[in-house]
Image 1 (spheres, rainbow, N blue to C red):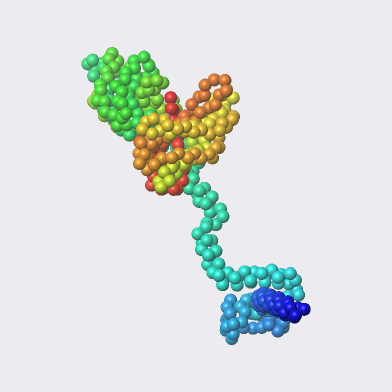
Image 2: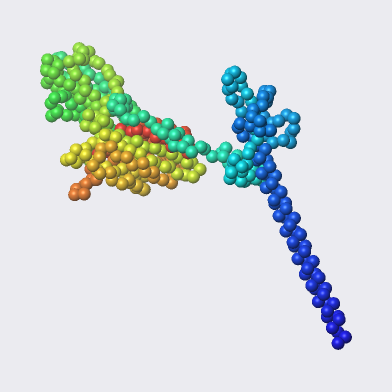
Length: 436
């Protein structure tokens, strides 16, 4: 019976400690809630001090001011910012006024503006505004990239592209021996010939004819892997009276020799002998015209190149083709584009687009990624062929181009521009060549 008072005292102390702890928790929560309410109350007060159009601080309409538009009240630095408004009065004088908001008229807008003010306050406290402003300053505006790419695209193809195509030059001479009735044609050399092989070179030779007769055909030797071949060969057309030569046309055609398929024409020249003074030797150094067998008749292709040196990759975008040659009896074609990645004259990788049926102006807009390091870029080229799909027979090649450092002038210029503008897509139209 004597231990009961001691137990009651311990229980009393435990209860007193619990009550004290509960009181402290309630006090802490009260302080937190009061601070939270005061924070939003200050935010709403700041918003209520924002002016609206039509009243001054006393609600009595406009009040004339000096030249203080667009600034803060100069009488009190701690006051809310002033929005100055200007209206044209009947006396044609500009009136600047300050107005106070009416929360009852704004309705739910006060809560929205209060939340915005709270966010602005928190942004200023934690420096969030600077971070967002930095991010926004780095990121481009929507649509900017698209507009830039469209502006960088080359113009649509026209007939002038065919006339401006450069395939090389040929140096030769013409002389007539009246005593022997012999026409002497000397082929000296060619320069800057069009590359026809995927190695970026050609195996050129010259075919010499006296049109319209195609029976008496003569040819030079084949110069292997040359774009600036030198022949220095002489050809004699014997037994041709002078008056008969006036009706003939000297036809010189430069071709690329191909062992396993038909030879590819590079360029040609037609010289009417009636326009040449045959009494003395005449020397010429003329630009070749694209062969009439393929010039401008195969179509064009728009291709974009982009090289990323650090990542070691080349992106090729096949955009579209224009005025392709018809391969079907319907007067249309079913074209698709095939790309061969060539390294050191060996085909190592193949990609192709989908087939676009019954069209001569297909649009693809398909990109292909090829891994090419900077150390291998000099030995790299790409064969891009446009092919007509056929379900019942072998597919027909419409034409193609070769892109690389050793390609023809037009393709080489596109390649060099890609190298000079890393990580920038460079688009260019190309006239399709007969790939044989």
